[in-house]
Amino acid sequence: MSRLLRKPVQKELTKGITLVHDVTSDHSTLEYVGFKMIDLVPGAKYTETLGKQECCIVAVTGQINVSDQEVLFDRIGTRESVFEKKPTDSVYVSNDKTFEIEAVSQARVALCYSPSNKQLPTKLISAADNGVEHRGTGNNKRMVHNILPDSDPSANSLLVVEVFTESGNWSSYPPHKHDQDNLPEESFLEETYYHEMDPPQGFVFQRVYTDDRSIDETMTVENSDMVIVPVGYHPVGVPEGYMSYYLNVMAGPTRVWKFHNDPDHEWILKR
Ligand SMILES: O=C(O)C[C@@H](O)[C@H](O)C(=O)CO
Image 1 (cartoon, helix red, strand yellow):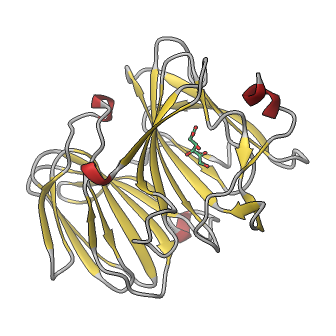
Image 2 (cartoon, helix red, strand yellow; image 1 turned 90 degrees about the vertical axis):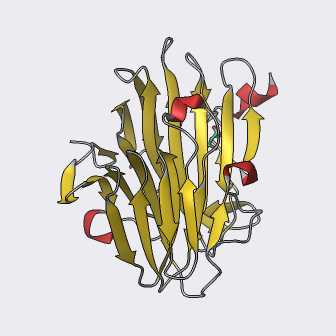
Protein backbone atom coordinates (compact mmCIF):
# COMPACT_ATOMS: atom_id res chain seq x y z
CA MET A 1 0.00 0.00 0.00
CA SER A 2 1.26 3.46 -0.88
CA ARG A 3 2.38 5.66 1.99
CA LEU A 4 1.88 8.77 -0.09
CA LEU A 5 -1.41 8.26 -1.94
CA ARG A 6 -4.65 9.08 -0.10
CA LYS A 7 -8.11 8.13 -1.29
CA PRO A 8 -11.14 10.25 -0.27
CA VAL A 9 -12.46 9.20 3.15
CA GLN A 10 -16.07 10.44 2.67
CA LYS A 11 -16.89 10.64 6.37
CA GLU A 12 -19.96 12.54 7.57
CA LEU A 13 -18.82 14.95 10.29
CA THR A 14 -22.20 16.47 11.03
CA LYS A 15 -25.39 16.70 9.02
CA GLY A 16 -24.51 18.26 5.67
CA ILE A 17 -20.73 18.25 6.20
CA THR A 18 -18.60 15.48 4.70
CA LEU A 19 -14.90 15.15 5.32
CA VAL A 20 -13.25 14.18 2.04
CA HIS A 21 -9.62 14.32 3.19
CA ASP A 22 -7.88 14.75 6.52
CA VAL A 23 -4.13 15.13 6.35
CA THR A 24 -3.63 16.75 9.74
CA SER A 25 -1.27 15.75 12.54
CA ASP A 26 -3.28 12.68 13.68
CA HIS A 27 -3.32 11.30 10.15
CA SER A 28 -0.01 12.38 8.69
CA THR A 29 3.69 12.58 9.42
CA LEU A 30 3.98 16.03 7.87
CA GLU A 31 5.19 18.71 10.29
CA TYR A 32 4.50 21.87 8.35
CA VAL A 33 1.51 21.15 6.10
CA GLY A 34 -1.98 20.16 7.17
CA PHE A 35 -4.93 19.76 4.82
CA LYS A 36 -8.63 18.99 4.99
CA MET A 37 -11.18 18.92 2.22
CA ILE A 38 -14.84 19.21 3.17
CA ASP A 39 -18.08 19.08 1.21
CA LEU A 40 -21.03 21.14 2.43
CA VAL A 41 -24.66 20.98 1.36
CA PRO A 42 -26.45 24.34 1.00
CA GLY A 43 -27.07 25.86 4.43
CA ALA A 44 -24.59 23.60 6.27
CA LYS A 45 -22.19 25.32 8.68
CA TYR A 46 -18.67 24.23 9.62
CA THR A 47 -16.89 25.90 12.55
CA GLU A 48 -13.30 25.44 13.65
CA THR A 49 -11.11 27.07 16.27
CA LEU A 50 -7.53 27.24 15.16
CA GLY A 51 -4.81 26.64 17.71
CA LYS A 52 -1.28 27.57 16.75
CA GLN A 53 -2.05 27.15 13.07
CA GLU A 54 -2.93 29.48 10.25
CA CYS A 55 -5.47 28.43 7.65
CA CYS A 56 -6.18 29.31 4.04
CA ILE A 57 -9.78 28.47 3.17
CA VAL A 58 -10.13 27.87 -0.57
CA ALA A 59 -13.62 27.83 -2.12
CA VAL A 60 -12.67 25.04 -4.54
CA THR A 61 -16.20 24.82 -5.94
CA GLY A 62 -19.53 26.36 -4.94
CA GLN A 63 -20.36 29.50 -2.99
CA ILE A 64 -19.77 30.01 0.72
CA ASN A 65 -19.89 32.65 3.44
CA VAL A 66 -16.80 32.82 5.65
CA SER A 67 -16.48 34.69 8.93
CA ASP A 68 -13.86 34.87 11.67
CA GLN A 69 -16.35 36.23 14.27
CA GLU A 70 -15.35 39.79 13.31
CA VAL A 71 -15.31 39.99 9.54
CA LEU A 72 -17.77 38.33 7.15
CA PHE A 73 -17.03 37.59 3.51
CA ASP A 74 -20.25 36.57 1.85
CA ARG A 75 -20.96 34.66 -1.31
CA ILE A 76 -17.37 33.89 -2.14
CA GLY A 77 -16.39 31.23 -4.66
CA THR A 78 -16.58 31.65 -8.40
CA ARG A 79 -17.11 28.28 -10.04
CA GLU A 80 -19.14 25.08 -10.06
CA SER A 81 -16.26 23.04 -11.44
CA VAL A 82 -12.53 23.65 -11.21
CA PHE A 83 -12.45 22.92 -14.94
CA GLU A 84 -14.08 26.26 -15.66
CA LYS A 85 -10.38 27.11 -15.28
CA LYS A 86 -10.99 30.44 -13.64
CA PRO A 87 -9.50 31.55 -10.30
CA THR A 88 -11.57 31.28 -7.16
CA ASP A 89 -11.79 33.18 -3.85
CA SER A 90 -9.99 32.19 -0.65
CA VAL A 91 -9.77 33.55 2.90
CA TYR A 92 -6.67 33.62 5.08
CA VAL A 93 -7.36 33.18 8.83
CA SER A 94 -4.58 33.48 11.39
CA ASN A 95 -3.73 31.29 14.38
CA ASP A 96 -5.95 31.36 17.51
CA LYS A 97 -9.00 32.53 15.54
CA THR A 98 -12.32 30.78 15.08
CA PHE A 99 -13.85 30.63 11.64
CA GLU A 100 -17.23 29.58 10.31
CA ILE A 101 -18.02 28.47 6.78
CA GLU A 102 -21.65 28.42 5.65
CA ALA A 103 -22.51 26.91 2.29
CA VAL A 104 -24.67 29.05 0.02
CA SER A 105 -24.67 26.34 -2.66
CA GLN A 106 -23.24 22.81 -2.70
CA ALA A 107 -19.57 23.48 -2.00
CA ARG A 108 -16.19 21.77 -1.79
CA VAL A 109 -13.80 23.69 0.44
CA ALA A 110 -10.09 23.15 1.08
CA LEU A 111 -8.63 23.99 4.48
CA CYS A 112 -4.88 24.43 4.18
CA TYR A 113 -2.97 24.64 7.47
CA SER A 114 0.51 25.36 8.75
CA PRO A 115 1.89 26.02 12.23
CA SER A 116 1.90 29.72 13.10
CA ASN A 117 2.37 31.88 16.18
CA LYS A 118 2.23 35.45 14.97
CA GLN A 119 -1.29 36.70 14.31
CA LEU A 120 -1.91 38.36 10.97
CA PRO A 121 -5.09 40.02 9.70
CA THR A 122 -7.86 37.88 8.26
CA LYS A 123 -7.81 38.52 4.55
CA LEU A 124 -9.95 37.84 1.50
CA ILE A 125 -7.80 36.62 -1.38
CA SER A 126 -10.24 37.29 -4.17
CA ALA A 127 -10.20 35.52 -7.52
CA ALA A 128 -8.93 38.78 -9.04
CA ASP A 129 -5.95 38.72 -6.63
CA ASN A 130 -4.73 35.38 -8.01
CA GLY A 131 -1.70 35.78 -10.23
CA VAL A 132 -2.32 33.67 -13.34
CA GLU A 133 0.82 32.21 -14.93
CA HIS A 134 1.29 30.14 -18.05
CA ARG A 135 4.37 27.96 -17.69
CA GLY A 136 6.22 25.61 -20.00
CA THR A 137 6.50 24.76 -23.69
CA GLY A 138 5.91 21.63 -25.78
CA ASN A 139 4.16 18.94 -23.74
CA ASN A 140 5.04 20.67 -20.49
CA LYS A 141 2.29 23.32 -20.57
CA ARG A 142 0.37 24.23 -17.48
CA MET A 143 -1.55 27.18 -16.08
CA VAL A 144 -1.02 28.27 -12.50
CA HIS A 145 -3.26 30.28 -10.16
CA ASN A 146 -1.11 31.74 -7.42
CA ILE A 147 -3.42 31.98 -4.38
CA LEU A 148 -0.75 32.54 -1.73
CA PRO A 149 2.67 32.81 -3.40
CA ASP A 150 5.84 33.66 -1.47
CA SER A 151 5.69 37.21 -2.86
CA ASP A 152 2.45 37.80 -0.88
CA PRO A 153 3.21 38.44 2.82
CA SER A 154 -0.37 37.71 4.01
CA ALA A 155 0.67 34.39 5.64
CA ASN A 156 3.46 33.30 7.97
CA SER A 157 4.20 29.91 6.35
CA LEU A 158 1.54 28.85 3.88
CA LEU A 159 2.02 28.74 0.11
CA VAL A 160 -1.06 27.77 -1.93
CA VAL A 161 -1.30 27.32 -5.68
CA GLU A 162 -3.62 25.70 -8.25
CA VAL A 163 -2.21 24.03 -11.36
CA PHE A 164 -4.07 23.02 -14.55
CA THR A 165 -2.19 20.65 -16.87
CA GLU A 166 -3.46 20.06 -20.40
CA SER A 167 -4.14 16.55 -21.66
CA GLY A 168 -0.98 14.75 -22.74
CA ASN A 169 1.23 17.18 -20.82
CA TRP A 170 3.50 17.07 -17.79
CA SER A 171 3.76 19.41 -14.84
CA SER A 172 5.96 19.76 -11.79
CA TYR A 173 8.33 18.79 -14.60
CA PRO A 174 11.20 18.48 -15.22
CA PRO A 175 11.15 16.89 -11.77
CA HIS A 176 12.06 19.29 -8.98
CA LYS A 177 12.35 19.06 -5.23
CA HIS A 178 12.49 21.45 -2.30
CA ASP A 179 13.65 19.36 0.63
CA GLN A 180 16.85 21.03 1.82
CA ASP A 181 16.77 23.96 4.21
CA ASN A 182 19.72 25.48 2.42
CA LEU A 183 18.76 28.89 1.11
CA PRO A 184 19.55 30.61 -1.15
CA GLU A 185 20.15 27.34 -3.10
CA GLU A 186 17.04 25.42 -1.99
CA SER A 187 14.24 25.69 0.55
CA PHE A 188 12.63 22.94 2.62
CA LEU A 189 8.92 22.77 1.91
CA GLU A 190 6.58 19.86 2.49
CA GLU A 191 3.81 19.67 -0.08
CA THR A 192 0.38 18.14 -0.61
CA TYR A 193 -1.41 17.56 -3.89
CA TYR A 194 -5.22 17.38 -4.14
CA HIS A 195 -6.08 16.12 -7.66
CA GLU A 196 -9.10 16.27 -9.96
CA MET A 197 -9.48 15.17 -13.57
CA ASP A 198 -11.81 16.05 -16.42
CA PRO A 199 -13.63 13.87 -17.34
CA PRO A 200 -13.66 12.43 -13.82
CA GLN A 201 -12.93 8.80 -14.75
CA GLY A 202 -9.47 9.98 -15.78
CA PHE A 203 -6.22 9.39 -13.98
CA VAL A 204 -2.74 10.85 -13.83
CA PHE A 205 0.59 9.41 -12.76
CA GLN A 206 2.65 11.04 -10.06
CA ARG A 207 6.13 9.87 -9.07
CA VAL A 208 7.72 10.88 -5.77
CA TYR A 209 11.40 9.98 -5.48
CA THR A 210 14.60 11.01 -3.76
CA ASP A 211 18.16 11.01 -5.12
CA ASP A 212 19.03 7.90 -3.08
CA ARG A 213 15.68 6.26 -4.02
CA SER A 214 14.85 5.66 -0.35
CA ILE A 215 11.49 6.95 -1.58
CA ASP A 216 10.52 5.99 -5.12
CA GLU A 217 6.79 5.61 -5.67
CA THR A 218 4.89 5.98 -8.91
CA MET A 219 1.21 6.32 -8.19
CA THR A 220 -1.93 6.06 -10.30
CA VAL A 221 -3.90 9.04 -9.05
CA GLU A 222 -7.65 9.24 -9.56
CA ASN A 223 -10.23 11.99 -9.21
CA SER A 224 -10.26 13.53 -5.69
CA ASP A 225 -7.14 11.61 -4.54
CA MET A 226 -4.32 13.26 -2.66
CA VAL A 227 -0.57 12.74 -2.84
CA ILE A 228 1.71 13.68 0.03
CA VAL A 229 5.22 14.87 -0.74
CA PRO A 230 7.27 14.90 2.48
CA VAL A 231 10.52 15.16 0.46
CA GLY A 232 11.73 14.42 -3.05
CA TYR A 233 10.99 15.12 -6.68
CA HIS A 234 7.30 14.96 -7.59
CA PRO A 235 6.47 15.13 -11.34
CA VAL A 236 2.94 14.60 -12.73
CA GLY A 237 2.12 13.04 -16.12
CA VAL A 238 -1.32 13.50 -17.65
CA PRO A 239 -2.64 10.99 -20.24
CA GLU A 240 -4.07 12.12 -23.57
CA GLY A 241 -7.78 12.94 -23.32
CA TYR A 242 -7.79 14.03 -19.67
CA MET A 243 -7.29 17.47 -18.20
CA SER A 244 -5.63 17.65 -14.78
CA TYR A 245 -6.20 20.01 -11.87
CA TYR A 246 -4.33 20.01 -8.60
CA LEU A 247 -4.23 22.20 -5.54
CA ASN A 248 -0.84 22.43 -3.85
CA VAL A 249 -0.15 23.45 -0.28
CA MET A 250 3.46 23.99 0.73
CA ALA A 251 5.07 25.05 3.99
CA GLY A 252 8.39 24.74 5.76
CA PRO A 253 10.72 26.61 8.09
CA THR A 254 11.15 29.54 5.67
CA ARG A 255 8.40 30.87 3.42
CA VAL A 256 10.37 30.75 0.20
CA TRP A 257 9.76 28.44 -2.78
CA LYS A 258 13.26 27.71 -4.05
CA PHE A 259 13.32 24.41 -5.87
CA HIS A 260 16.10 22.29 -7.32
CA ASN A 261 15.61 20.44 -10.61
CA ASP A 262 16.73 16.83 -10.93
CA PRO A 263 20.08 17.30 -12.73
CA ASP A 264 19.44 14.13 -14.78
CA HIS A 265 16.41 15.73 -16.41
CA GLU A 266 17.20 19.44 -16.40
CA TRP A 267 18.40 19.21 -20.02
CA ILE A 268 14.72 19.17 -20.99
CA LEU A 269 14.56 22.89 -20.24
CA LYS A 270 17.57 23.62 -22.42
CA ARG A 271 16.39 22.07 -25.68
O1 LIG B 1 4.81 24.61 -12.41
C1 LIG B 1 4.31 23.54 -12.08
O2 LIG B 1 4.34 22.57 -12.82
C2 LIG B 1 3.63 23.40 -10.73
C3 LIG B 1 4.58 22.97 -9.69
O3 LIG B 1 5.58 23.90 -9.56
C4 LIG B 1 3.92 22.69 -8.33
O4 LIG B 1 3.23 23.79 -7.85
C5 LIG B 1 5.01 22.27 -7.40
O5 LIG B 1 5.53 21.19 -7.55
C6 LIG B 1 5.48 23.17 -6.38
O6 LIG B 1 6.67 22.69 -5.83
